[in-house]
Image (cartoon, rainbow, N blue to C red):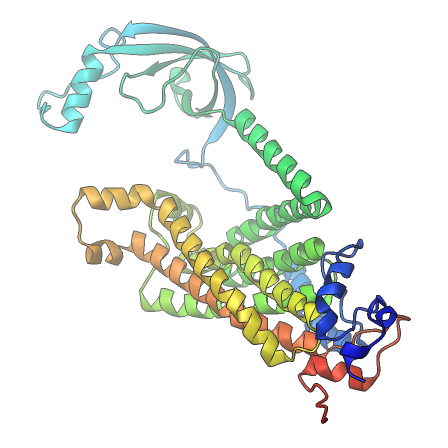
Amino acid sequence: MTPSTQPPDESAEPSGHTGPAHADHDHAHGHGHSHGHGPAAPVSKHLRKVIAAVLIPFATAVFVGMAVLWPGGAPAHERSGVGFDRQTEQARVVKLEQVDCKSVNASQVPPTANPSTPEGREARAAQTGQCKKATVEVGTGPDKGRTFIEIVQPGAPRQLADGQQVVVAYAPDAPRDLQYSVIDVNRKIPLAVLAGIFALVVVLVGRMRGLFALVALAISFAVLTLFILPAILQGSNPLVVAVIGASAIMLIALYLCHGLTARTSVAVLGTLVSLLLIGLLGSVFIDWAFLTGNTDDNTGLIHGLYPDIDMSGLLLASIIIGSLGVLDDVTVTQTSAVWELHHADPAMGPRSLYRAAIRIGRDHIASVVNTLVLAYAGAALPLLLLFSIANSSVGAVANSELVAVEIVRTLVGSIGLVASVPVTTVLAALVVSADRPAGPAGTPTAPGAGRGGRGRGRRRKR
């Protein structure tokens, strides 16, 4: 008797292993229960052993590597007083008044100042315009309660307001009147409110999975700040540190958010293979293009403070870590697609599953690559604008190390993302097709019933 002639009561049995004709019914039935996030993990003991044999040694090596390279904090150094390497305190503007710039000697026009140059025009405007005289009160540190005067010129990009919270730099070796200066605005409150809104939206929409995602995000940030950054500063190889740290983030985040299942394990394997590819390509093209990684004031300051840091290795580490977040999304999506296709039609073999899932993956590739390129372009928009103002050619712009670094970062990361789709899809199709699902009583089905999942469905001759 063919499946189409089975009695109604048998087709309604919630075994989850009916033929293709009943796949939609079983799929809807499965999602009506608490386990509606997808099919359960494979129950095949052999399959679980194979996955564990790969992942357990890998996870052990990752966490042993973290223990060996654990830095115990960033190394101490004497502050240079340059850029971010300054002692800072919190302060508040307690008084603000308008004064004549010339009366406070805010700007002196050089004898040779040319009014046709931007510098000359700015100096003359500052001398003849109205400045702001701000009285700032220090709120933290050894001089709490002390006040000082800050003069804000009319053309300054950062203007102050009465009662505004600010960040001030403290130079203890400078003359008393010059020890404090305003360097930025205190943005902690708006940033904290925005972070709270983000967390609330994630939890309201994602519920428990959203909560786990926030926990994973906190753990990822902890690994980055407590392990990766201090270990690099201590002199460890940036590439090794980045690979170990990124692998730890991947294992913790994926298993915490998606559960300890074979489906998550396949996503982990796909992500790992793609990260290795990104690391290999990044290393080759960073060396080939002679990218030093020392491209701006911040990287120059790092190299000056810690000359032993391999800046090109630091660049490669940033490529690996930056690609990890998008890789997780791609591999989890592809693995879930394969599992859902198999759940809808258990008779599909690995080839059929791959062909169906790769069509989904192609759509994902198009959107993800475009997203990655636009993200990097948006981050470098001011730099690109400067090149546009200078009327530089596309070739000259691309050849600049500032832009070449972003090109290599974007293209290497994109290649890894594109490669992760077929790699993860193949792994997921092979794993889910090799599984022998359990019957209603929790016992494995007969060997013949599992052959359809391996693409060897029984052929009936009539």
